[in-house]
Each structure stands twice: as C-alpha cells, then as structure tokens.
Image (cartoon, rainbow, N blue to C red; front, side):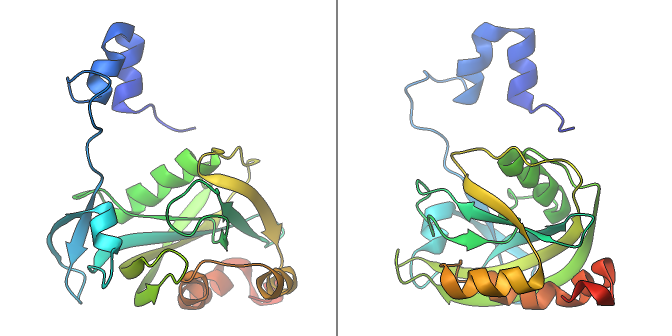
Length: 212
C-alpha cells in the first residue's frame, strides 16, 4: 500500500521539478546528500549524527538501527539475500529487512518504510520486540556494526516484489530449513544476534508449534 514519498508527490504535480527536488535544488549532476544516522549512547539516547559510511568504519560509532522479522501464515520466516552491489555485506543472507532510521525518524516508521522500499510489501501486522546492542565486525569489508537495534516482528501476506538493487533473492523458511541454509550459505554477521534477541516475540507470534 505504501504512501508516495515527498519527491514522488512533487513529481506528480510538476514533473519538471523532480530532478531539482531530488538534489535539493541543485543541478542533477550534483553530489547527492549524505545519508545521516542517529548516534546514541549505551542506553539508546540520541547524542548526535554521523554520515552512514563513517559510522561503520572501524572501530565504528554506536548508532540506532532496526531489524524486521516477518512471517507468512504458515509460520515461515521471510529471508532476503542482500544484493551483490551493496557495499556492506553483499550477497549474504539476512533477516527480512534491516536498516537505520533517519535522524528524528521513529524506528517503527523506518522499519515499515524500509520493508516496503526493499521488498515491495507492507506488514499486515508488526509489533515491537525489544532492543539489542552489539558490536559485529565484518571481516570481508572491514566495516563494523556498532548498533543499538530496535527489533520488530510481524506478518506478511502479500507476495514480495524486491528491489533488485537491494535484494538478490528471497525465501520463506521453516526453522529446520533455516538451520540447513545457515550451515551451507553465508549470513550477515548480525543475523543470529538479532534473531536470538527477537525469539521471545517470534514465539509469541508463531506459537509453540512453530518451532522458533
């Protein structure tokens, strides 16, 4: 169902303004605005901002993030394999969606927004599932995930329509299928940490027969 972005709305009203608005009024060839993340203290309180790549360069700066776990009506978890073109952890499997709120953006809103942007679906149900703080270096890229991560668990009924620039492929898996895939294919460094932290909420959602 996704609401149109501000840029999309402006383009619909005045197509000629779209390129100018997308680059903050400068020429289309201008350097795009940097993506800023929200820096936090150990309690999750906002203390500032940092550019996205800078926040992930070793030793990393603690910043706010989110992770989403969506399940179908059979209790299977929706996984995604990150696109090969991504600069951080390309080509590895991970949870349904993860990312960073914009400074001042509520984590719940960011999680719903990014799930739609990446997968083309909106959760039919999504609830908070706590937070987890971790420090995970990525040996392949040398980047470091120092994150205060807000967890969300929910249901999805629509068929995903992934953005190929973000997602290489997706799969719905049972706990047993996840174990097989995790043993055979590379996963993101943070995957098991966020999954384990979200398990209580996942079990509440899927029921004891789900096996999570």
